Length: 145
Image (cartoon, rainbow, N blue to C red; front, side):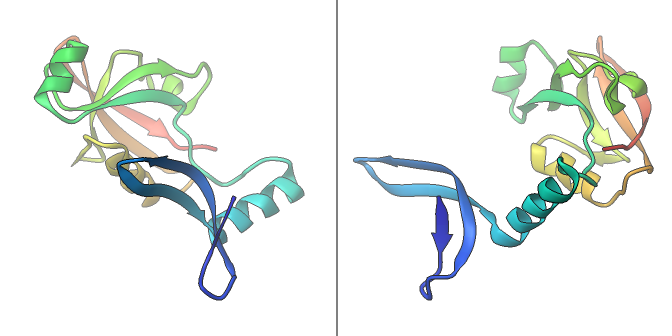
């Protein structure tokens, strides 16, 4: 649904909402300027274009407890799946790798990874440090859509 300001103007598109008897209500919305650009892209191109994707699915490992639960000994992003023929696959990133750095900056959350990616554009090369079988491995990844 829509998120409106006090003037009745559409300012966002709600994409998640939670409510219950013990909470006031919690919602998350995509800002309208981002939603508009996505809609325009879909109409013009049939897809969302110009956004970097690595082609991985991962879990955030941001505490010692989470690390122990997943059987790893470092904090970072535990790769659970790598999409075949993706940027990550071409770079050599594998399932069960833990991404700990992106271009020399520590990565422990999705926001850390998004922040690192946001300073790059399609065609740039990034260096990722992963922990694989208790060894640190540096991998170069050319960024693409």
